[in-house]
Image (cartoon, rainbow, N blue to C red; front, top):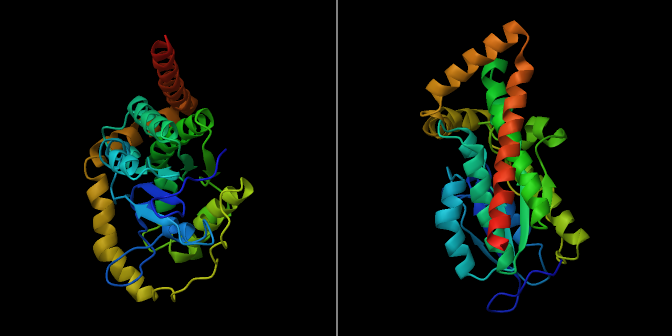
Length: 291
């Protein structure tokens, strides 16, 4: 895998695509701005400051990355592109794993065809992070597992550097997460940056100093965190789940019926079949294009 290509002024150009996680929500730097793991990583890509552009936008789904962020990214001719997205897709009533897979396939293909090194990650499911009751959390977990399976498969297909971030101690250590439980705090963003840096350094693609694990700013007081959660944080969750809630209640009822009948495995099999069909459909398209 080749090193990230130079930007117009020489240092490597890094472009980050995605949603609120990559935008930096949970890692405030004053004045209402966010920093986040991608900005922290950019500082350690080389001895000279990397040219860095963060195109991630809170609330983005795979469609937004494909249609809005990707064209802007390619115009910048990056040598390194991160694509971390998919959680917001699982929080919509329109969730369709085949559509998610098709969009990610097009994004990954476009990045690699333009010569960029691709960074990807799988993520924990939002239901578990929010501490929802099992009947509500399990359908969301099933959706996130489907997205993660697609990301794993496509990352391998396109030779991406992939970070397995969907489980492990970092997901359960409350000190790493902000008050809303969906976004890392500064410590969590630093952990992500460190892990991405180690992955890049292993392949000779990060030659600058690794980001520090220690926070630069004091952690928000508990009262401030609760105030943020009660105002902006709760609003963030509500805006992304409004159209899902009726469907989620239906999914929860279905979950409880299968559990009572002892047939919960059928739901897992159904989800696995949908993922297999989504990846198979991409293979058919790929063969047709090759022909």
